[in-house]
Structures are given as C-alpha cells and as structure tokens.
Length: 266
Image (cartoon, rainbow, N blue to C red; front, side, top):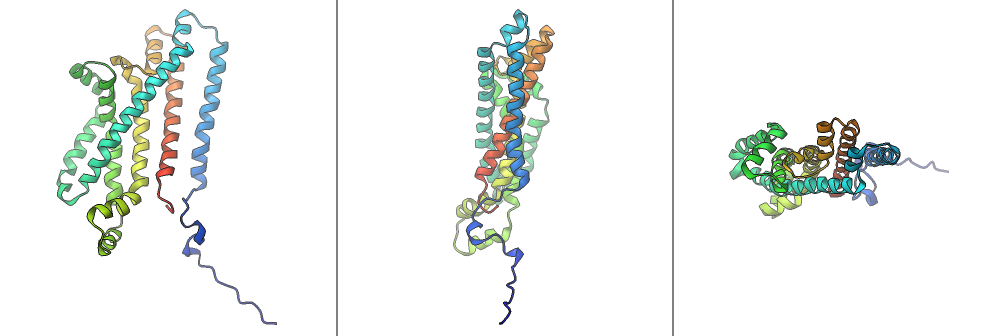
C-alpha cells in the first residue's frame, strides 16, 4: 500500500479563503474591549452604593442629587461629542488636503498652528476665548476643538503618507483617478491610524471638558470646582471619579469605533 505524501502548508499564505475578508482581532484587542466597560461598571456601582449609604451635609446632598449629576454628565457628554465631531469634520479633510502635492508646502504652517493650540495650557486657552467670545457652551466647544485637533490632523497626514506608493501607482495603472485612489486605496488603508488619532482626541477633549465650568458651560467639572471652593473632600473625589470613568468609557467607545471602521483583513 502506497504511503500518502504529506501536503506542505504554506504558513505565509494567510488565513483560509473563507476568513480572508474577516477583521483581525487579537487577544490584546479582546482584553482592551472587555476590561474597560467592566471596570467602569464596577467602580460606578461602588460609587452608587456609597452615594446611597453616605451621610452627607446639605451642601453635599444638594450637589450630589441624582438629577443634578445626570444633568452635569449629559452636559459633559454634549461638550465632548460636539467638539469631537467638529474636530473630525475639520481635521480629516484638512489632513487629506495637506497630503496632496500642491498643498504639501503648507504642512509645517498648519501643523505648527495645531501644535500651538495643544501646547497652550487648556485653562489659558479657555480663558482667552472667554475674554474674546464671552462664556457659554459654544465658547467651550471652540476651545475644546482647538485643543483636540492636533492628534487627528497629524494621524491623518501620517496615515495617508504611510500608504505604500506602489499601491497608489497600481491603482493609477488600472485607470483610477486621483479621487478614486484616495477613497478606494489611501483612506481605507489609513483608517486605523486616523481612528487612533480620533480616539486620542476624544480622551483629551473629555478630560479638558471638566474646565468648561469656569466659563459657565456646565459639565462634571462643576462638582469638582464646588468641592475645591468649599473644601468638601467628598465632592472633589466624586467629580474626579466621574470624570475619569466618563473618559475611560469614551476611550472604550473610541476603540469600538476604531474596530468597526477598520477595513476587513487588517
């Protein structure tokens, strides 16, 4: 009886045919997608238990009313989401434009302005805009947008410029226009890098939004500010914990969005 000849398996040939279009999910990605929401739920549950059982004076009880906390948290989320949307709508098209040949000379100038916006102390930036535009929600939005634009702009430029030029040339060789190569080759391959910048910007904006309370724009920073002003340790800890939990949850949502928008097979 003839012996069967073993079939060599090429390990570099990639995943099986049915899995080549699937997204690559590593163990580290699974951990990063499951641990943060569990941690947020545990810490928030501990806070709820403390809030229900703690003996609070009239000032603390008034500031930590559930209706008040819900209002402040919703204001904080609004500040973060609106500023993040503006950042994406401005930084991504601007970054794409700066990677085109005719605009590359402007890259140092535009990135320098974005660097200045983030290098400036966040409190100083908010106060300067307050003196110029007066206080309120939209003044805080412009300050947060300026503060969060750099990571998205920089990652958009780096992501598109990091695409293999031979792939772009191959697309041109089969008749693709410049717009077609941008939307079918360059942007899909640079999405992971761009989304990493969006996630970084979200965390920066969520943390900095706590300073919006100084110009009457609301947010969870009001709990922290009241605690510092009135020397209430419980308010200071509550404000810090809720801001940290919200930033962690927003960072997790950014990771989920990054995974969802990542092209299949990457």
